[in-house]
Amino acid sequence: MKEYIEKAEHIVILTHMAPDGDAMGSALALWHYCKGQRDKVQSTKEVTVIVPNAFPAFLGWMPGAKEVKVYEQESAACDKLIAEADLFLCTDFNEPKRIGPVGEKLLASKAPKILIDHHIDPLLTSPEGEQIWAEVHSHPEASSACEIVYKLITGVNLEIATCIYTGLMTDTGNFSFNSTNAELYDIIASLLRAGVKKDEIYNAVFNQFSTDRMRLTGYALYRKMRIYPEYHLALITLSADELDQYHYKTGDCEGIVNMPLQIADVYYSVFMREERAKPGTPKPRIRISFRSQGDRPVNVWAGEVFHGGGHANASGGEVLGSMGYAVKLFEQSYGKYLKI
Ligand code: 5GP
Ligand code: MN
Image 1: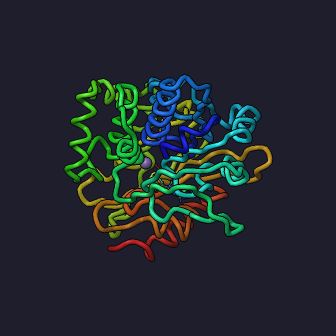
Image 2: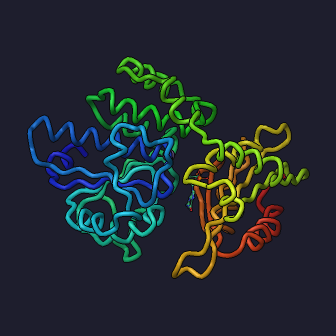
Image 3: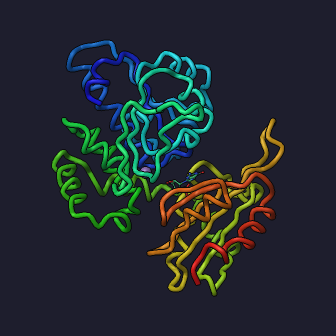
């Protein structure tokens, strides 16, 4: 990877739709790393992070976030960068589909592509049967893509350390899951020695609710949560109209899906959010998040019924159609996929 980065003149770093702390952290850590390599040899290397759609405001403070290009908002400029790129660094996703419309552009490019990811079963060949990646750093056992980036690079400065800490923290729910490996805490110790202000990062990410977001969370829990006791299952749905009432912004629903797991007998939680039909797409889209505890995988359910997938305890998917239709699919299928 180091050699690829040294040789490239136009590097594009890509990460998944609805970027979270790990997506932004791993992409920006690589961005700072590549710029550092460039400045060492005073080259003219161009390095850009492109995300498919907007990242939440609570990640806007991250070092370099203001330089990130959002494909949905600047498609023409991004298409040009992608067409000119002579190296792609792809982080925190396992198949081009997860970067939306950018995926096709990525596959169309002949430039070498490097994958850095912690999701299971990365897609290695294109629909045409060609190898997609020049290098694959796939570690499903890693807490986060940021952990893999940390292990791949040297010369971690404060900016890189801050980006990496953010991804470790958000992908483990502030070290409450996927974080039992002692080595992770060695990494954290070295990030703290690099000067990371961990309490400030926690505050910047988790304590930034708008009043509307807090009230939306309250509404979702109080009025919209259904419990299916025999399956230890909770479902929360929010329609586009309901989101409008609370002036929904990207990221405002982040974390809602985890909350029902705080109930003693709830081990599965599902959250559905409606996106209105856009011009050209006749049906609304229901984005769905799945969470579970312990040995109760949800990724097969998400994959087989909701066109998605993910980790055993944290998956996602979607339905093209009404909320009523999505709930019907859910109610028809949970009995088949969940343990009593
Ligand atoms: P979230 O609920 O935070 O959107 O997604 C949780 C996890 O599920 C993500 O980290 C990702 O691994 C996976 N995931 C979410 N949406 C999709 C999807 O549409 N397809 C696949 N394959 N995985 C998804
Ligand atoms: Mn991740």
